[in-house]
Each structure stands twice: as structure tokens, then as C-alpha cells.
Image 1 (tube, one colour):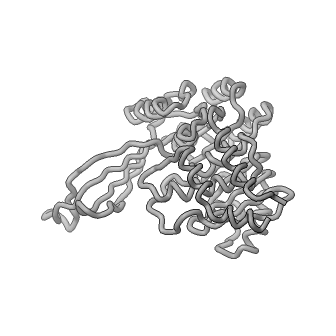
Image 2: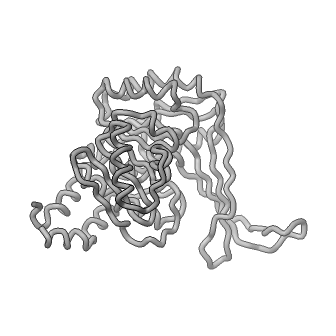
Image 3: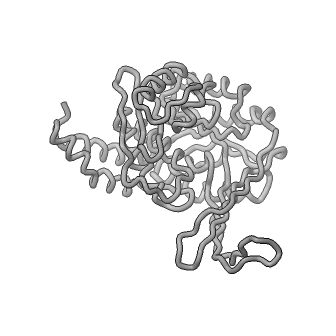
Length: 346
């Protein structure tokens, strides 16, 4: 039985211990662009809006957002990944370096274009800007060449790292030819491994934790779950066993998240804050970053998931590809009335 106050205190201590934790991040690196404009008029050339440009924000996206979240929480990400020999790649690496990430193991692939996801947002001068179109460009078919610089980069980062995080956006860095050797190297180093994979989760086995969203979990399992908690509990357990993971955290959008850990009952956490979100872009990257840092800082899976749930609830209230700092996480823990209710029940 947990004594009153100890859960909150334990969560706060875990946040304090996050600073300085070195995490090897193997990631598909993306540059996110957000172009903001105000509606001027309707074009005479076609029935489309003409926007007056106000600003463009360029932020780390894809797996680079996981790197950015780790750095924002004062962790020490050691990045392994590729960009193209292009302006977008140069800018992305510069941003990550400026934010405290170790980018010395990011290489320029001449057969690859840095992926850029450009979102155009529009509205009136005094309204919230809404996304009206997204244009994706970049990537490439150089997956076969990705293994050559990948192995030495990983080997070099293994020794200083306390754990490893894989952020797989299915952009070719990680595929059936590279996933097996990557996992073998990480197992050989006995590093805790955290995986977020958009479409290849079943190829990763023997991890500490994976954090699929509900749709990714359904795709990996081949079964629709929807919001049936009993069916979700069976599916979560089956998926955890199928990929031999200690923990599966299934994020469920406005319904919160569900946690399935070996030897423990399923835990369903309601969404933190409000379900009226501002922007879900990159929230999954925040979840796995916080879960990984909390676990590597000594938290049990249930506590790490609580912190990740707080973090997810905070970033979806921000516009763009967002991060949060440790003080924001502390405020969420201090202010959560649910922790007071749990202490009284204990």
C-alpha cells in the first residue's frame, strides 16, 4: 500500500533525476515547417484563398522531435541518423545541436533528401490559425546504403549511453535488413530499449517498452479494438507477448493511455488536462521521450507512464511540434488532484 504523498514525491524525484541522462537515439530525422498566413482575399484565378505570409517556423520533426524532447527535459541525446546533403539537413542538424543534442553521429547521405513536412496554416488576424494543407517532400530509396554508416555510429554511442530509443517513421533507415543487427548490438550492450515504430513494430523484439498509438497497435496485432477496454486489455497483452516487451504503452488520444506490463494488471490512465486539444503533432514523440527518461531515472513502468501521460496532455495544448521542460512536468504533478485522491484511498 502506498503511503499518502509518496506517489507524488516519487514522481517529482524521477523528474529531478532526468537531467544529464544520456540516451542513444536511432531515428528518422525530419524537418517540420509551419507557414502561417492571414486570409487576404479570394483569388481571381481560381476559387482559392490568397494568404499574406506572416512567419515560418522550422522545427525538428519525426524522430528529431523525440531528440528535441529529450533535450528539452535536460537529457543528453546521442543522435544516430541521416540527412541529405541539402539546406534542410544542414538546418535540422544545426537546430538539434543548438538545443543540446550530440549530432556528431548524424551523416549526410548523398542519395537521400532530408524529409520536410510543410504545413500551411491560415486564419484571420484575430483568429487561431488552422492547418489547410500539408506538403511532404524528401526521403529516398537509399535504404540499402543506410547500414554502412549506421553500425559504427551505433557502436561509438553505446558506451556512454544509459539506454536507447528507436524512433522509426518508416523512412528507410530501419528496415528488415537493419533492424535485426541494430537490436543485436543493443542487446549486446545490455541497454534498456524503447521503441516507437509507425508500421514495423512486429519486427522489433525483446525491448523494454514500446509506445504505439491505438491505430498502430491494432495494425501490429491485426485486430480492431476501438474503445472496448476488455478487448484492449487482451490485445495489449497479446501484443506485448508477441514482441517480447516488458511494457506496452498504448496511447489513445483524448481517452488517455493504457499500460500493459509483464506481471501486472493493465493500467488505464485518463487524459491529463482537457480532451479539447490544440495540436497533436508529435505528441507520441513526447510520450516515448518522457517514458524513456523516467524509466532510466529509476521509475517503475506505471510511474513512468503517468509522467508520459502528463507530458502528452501538456504538449497537445501547444501549437506546432511541441516540447516541454521539467518544470512544466513538475507543475503538472504538483497540481494533479487525482494524486490526492489516490493518497486518500491508500
